[in-house]
Length: 132
Image (cartoon, rainbow, N blue to C red; front, side, top):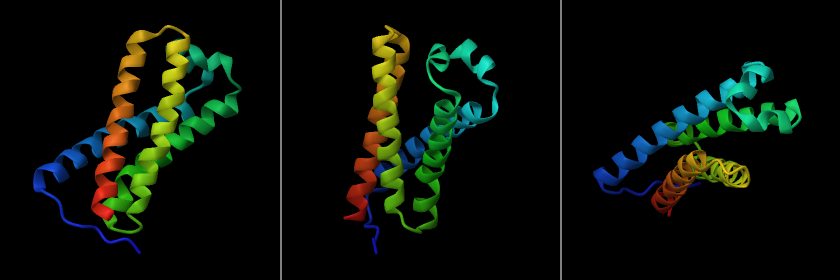
């Protein structure tokens, strides 16, 4: 069983702010990928038409579960290690998204995805240190 070690209030606050922002981003993005018709999504995300519909829906589900995982395990102190794993899982999704945007020369999207990736790795690292 993991125990959470105390850290400074400021670093904990920064981690919580990032967790909440990233969770909100992934929850909204994931819900959109799950419930919005693919034809509508394709108007905003050019890559949608390049993949089967189930791939888009699975990515959406992974984003929703990851977003929930960024908040609830740590907040409820029930298996807090899942927050670290959720952050790593979302980081993997961002690595693939970054590769996709680079290949398609979508540089504006590449920058934002890279920032999300850095934030997720920062969350994983910070929370992992607190579990040690």
